[in-house]
Length: 286
Image (cartoon, rainbow, N blue to C red; front, side, top):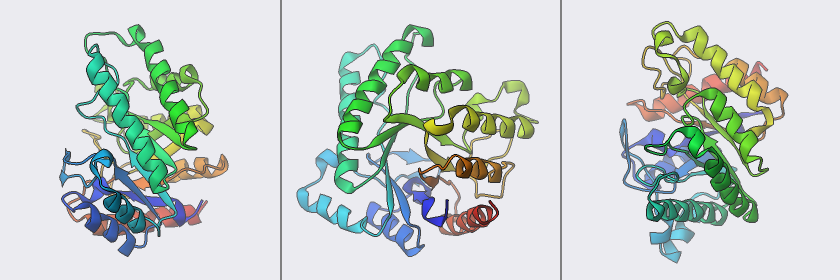
């Protein structure tokens, strides 16, 4: 792996408009970029730059494609807030699937390699009651992505027990469906009694996730994190996470996906520069 793997999720540039965010990532000389296939959502630092593909004119799509040409790697994040894939409401579920498929089509048109998406708890149901449904839905999404010569990656966070999260990919059993690990956002997997002194536990859990999933890891989001909240988003090297062993493991398994910075720092550009420099130093040490 080298610095071309390292990119920026545009959520790191909250309150920038989409064009300015892309130009900033280009000016900072990153070779990879991650975009949200939705707009108007707010993160911890402000509104996340993004787009609604089905609302764009042909001219706007062409303009977006031109702005992305310099990047070697492009990643798309499908909508998940307010459109759960797993719900008793069939109308909402159909709309969620439609938006995921639009995100995959957008990724194909924009020259992206990967679409990330999220599972969600089905309100009122135990996980085991819709376990097979989850696998079937992700297989259907995988079939659609495979038809576009793309991969999809299900983000960490749900299922909210790491054993169930890792087992999900065995149940899905689809070549085009893998895992997207948020290195700095594994707080949901920490037991409540380990959150205060959880640094060693967190780092052990982090490596365990990578080792169990192995070749099913399709995408990695990077940020640092600290207790007791473990919400992530910190500049690389400013928290408690041992990231170099993760990079070494990925290098050993010949990982080909992205390393996407997803930060929530007030001085976004400084945080991105600093994080990239520290990751590049780790990569040189491999």
